[in-house]
Image 1 (cartoon, helix red, strand yellow):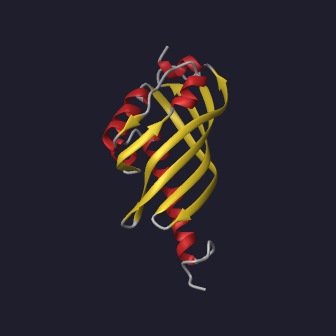
Image 2 (cartoon, helix red, strand yellow):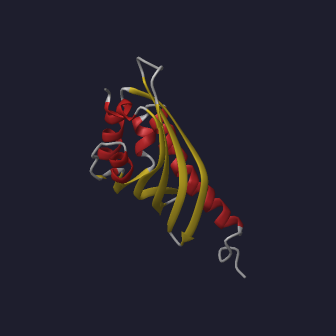
Length: 158
């Protein structure tokens, strides 16, 4: 058996870690307000669909296409907030230069000027990734909300 054929081979383990690291870059980019770090998690032609999650929060957020457009849209929509995004329970499946990642992301949002209000969303992420050289990039991400606690109007800047 070749070391690349097994899901527990060194190469597969390294790839699985690198796939999860992509979602960590995304989360850190949001929390650090680092648009370049956030963009580094996405492929040029990526699609981000937050619609299932935002609909449950009473908002419409159409799918966003393109690395720079996604980074700009997320930076703008969260710009008035202090956030923490915590990634847990990642499950990765590999298929050559493609991967699928399912994870839970707990997202705490507080108005930058009023930390007495918050909304905590725990979301399910379904992420399709592609390998680009030595890094993995998000090709398509769909975010659905599992549960929410707090004041969802915080997201709208109300």
